[in-house]
Length: 359
Image (cartoon, one colour):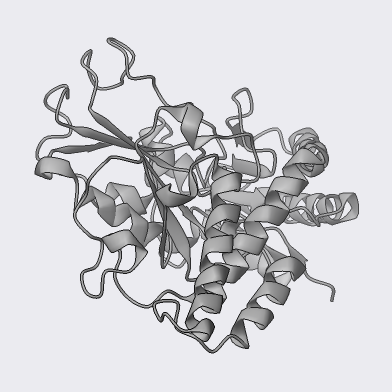
């Protein structure tokens, strides 16, 4: 059985460019903090990757702080300026949501001295939410603006046009493995001049913002993946992915009138399709499709092993039955039309059997 991987929002398979860069870095014996030739060579690899990530994100290289991933980078919300309050968008990833002070999130509008944390593109639905501008009256949760904006750009980078410099954000977080880099490495983008407490204290690496010897191998792979992702975007790869996503959506919609397609009329990532058939549990669909040779998910990868209703969909106004019935199909640069048509045929066959059992 030839398996079809349709869970790119969880992890995108590693790119050949990233693998090659990592193999080269494995042969580099120096510590990037050492001043001898071997150390300088390792440092050069780190700085090359920093420039590659900065180019992909649209920021200055000195604004890139390497971390173990977006989740660690989001600790900037704990180490925030002046220990100010954090307000998190209701559909944000758990990596941001876990830093929310629930005691103050629903009662009062925020304003100066606060941080708003939000995702640019939702991992479950693919819906793109443009960040608000720092002008009076354009921030959610109240008329007054916040002083800082943290964006989760993990799903957006390399798939849709984005520039940190143009976004009005003060901080951003991302992970390498969403763009074909290795797992376990990511970055915090911190606007030049903004001061936060270190993510980790110790030897003062990463300009004093995140101590600990840099993961040279992972960082090299991250940089190479970022460069390749920028080329894909410029070459129209994701326009082709969007075409296949739409073919899949149209096939499923034609074959299942009871299915709800989340965000169909909204701006979405070109690769993401989230849909729900009320009464047919998402985790059941995931298991059935897995046995049939297709890798998909219900909710985000971080919670896919848990049987619970999607917090994102309930926050969007869907009832719990519908939210618990949602699955996500996320395509990648190497997904083919045959892949999506095979998925549609298999899923519709199983949906028909589900309807027969429920009748």
